[in-house]
Image (cartoon, rainbow, N blue to C red; front, top):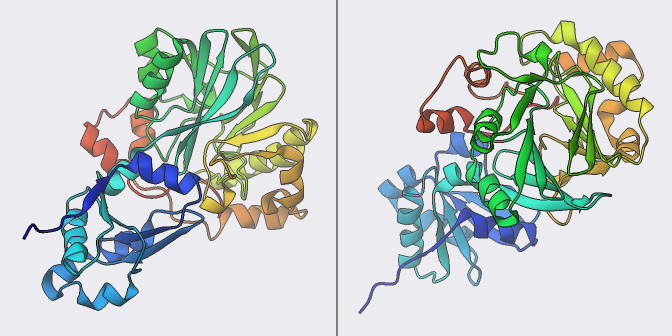
Length: 378
């Protein structure tokens, strides 16, 4: 009699199910500490931690009553090995619809899903690349055959496939600031396509490579579309937002949907908190409420729109975002400098890599980025 075997599923297919709001039952086979720190999230995701090290010794029996009888079961681990063993245990216990997630949480962390945000006035569109496993958001603006990329992740293949499919000429690559939670792919993708790489100079005093400066009020034209730099310090001293086509406000790590940026990742919280408040409570206030805010990160799945995108009108955020509604300056300072979440994993090494001081191998880069993003105050 042939032994029944589990099936495999790619992270891309799993992400699509989450974006389509399918109910998913996930078994996470990693150690409990790793599971508690970071896990698959989704509006309709139910997840159970079943550590492989434990069931390898004592068997899966103690967890079977917690598994659904007539529902697909998706098993994930760190890299895709232990999940196969746990998935087979579940199949051997009599469950037939069991899937192992290929590549595990490593693949989950690195997947980028492009989502169309909206049209541009001179033709073309704004696209948001959602890195669901890390909460990173990057952007590709395409118009009349030209493209700009903002806050590029280090995984370049998804952008390259998108660019190839649409036969785009990349002319500008920009970072809103020197990132501390993920390694920027901006310089590499600019080199690949012969584009110009831009970085705010106040964040780049220790950068070891050549770049073009982003200064307040600078304008860039992409296929007839205007991108305007809007200096917005506070998360870093150089943080710069971009107003695209007078419709979209790319806020970097200054303003999120449910929170605001933290000012402490370069060890200068007390120096930068005043800049942060000035940006949020004065500079952004000068802008129209109708701008659609597109941040560089999100903190939880509850910030996600029905199509999987992350966005909200600026006026809506001034009504609903707690970080924009702290009237007392002392209370605001306390909120954004005390009791903050842990700093991102390897953030100092990531900053040095983004400065060009370090050149870690691919596996080391993956290890440095492991875990959730922690760029928001809460």
